[in-house]
Image (tube, rainbow, N blue to C red):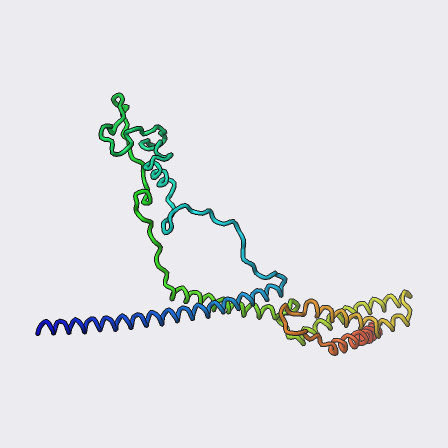
Length: 297
């Protein structure tokens, strides 16, 4: 009876272990699926980020990214899974195999004498000391051998947890998205008066160009006073020539320095507003100059 009860308890224990193993296998499979899904998601994010960075680079004149090329690392002759032996260990290994390092076995620092038969292991008829006078005998000291020469395998690197690595990759991707958004915001601001609104920027540019035209107008008025410019030419430049030059100068300045690096479509240049400012500012400045001249006179 006790034998049957022990058998039943053993069967129940085996069944529980089997169910625990199945649950562990199912949990491991679910974990692997989650890791693969996360890796695919991060791969898509990184691909999209790379494409967006290429677009940003092309917008500022940098070509698309390419795979960096460089000299290939020197191939290692060490067996797979084992780190290459240091020079001292390699020399010691060659000495044990009868290679070139055997000629230097049994010599101290600064000595280059062959070890002879005393350096060969397993030779009972040969003494460990070289024959010579008293005080001239030298002990055949073995050379220092590294762990690789002694047959000790190299220490394996610690296993990497894929969950931790994927979490770090996700954090880096989030950080890259944040910097990318900041870069896009900066790229949408023009180089000329970046803190101003588009309307204020256009008004400032057209007003500045009209001010330059007004200065040229005053120079022409002074030149007309000394007889260098006649009245018809002065009137034509004041009513049409200088306002048109001021308007086109402001239009070109807004198109060259008032346009963001990345913008959807053509940025507005406010043509009607600029035309009104330039064609009204120069004649108004002329009238104001005449009134000021009469008052001061």
